[in-house]
Image 1 (cartoon, rainbow, N blue to C red):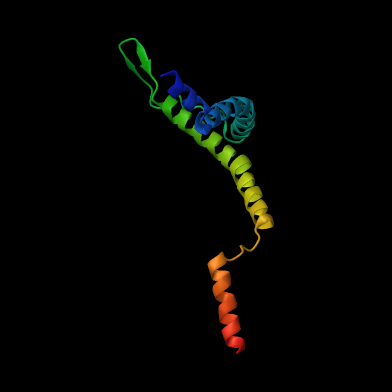
Image 2 (tube, rainbow, N blue to C red):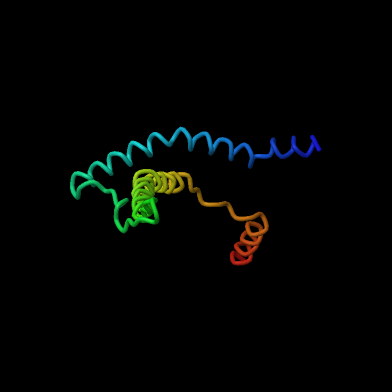
Length: 125
């Protein structure tokens, strides 16, 4: 049983996951700062982006706020858009640029190279 656990831990997937979680935690303040800036801009242009009171109603003494779901969805979309446009798009462009710089024409396989030489020798006769 301990051998199986050791194999699981030393496999790359578990370590990659741990690194991802730690980086995600370290990235959270950046996401929070970008969200705060965007929410401040939206708040300045359109008023406070809070839809909590939209469609609210009372059941006995409890106030039900279905608009809180709308606020959460809008906040999620803002965070997702910020991450996409400020992190994903630039990283994809950087990766594509690196890929273009590092692409070398692949050498043909050995059998293809030999067949090409044979063809060239036959054509020369």
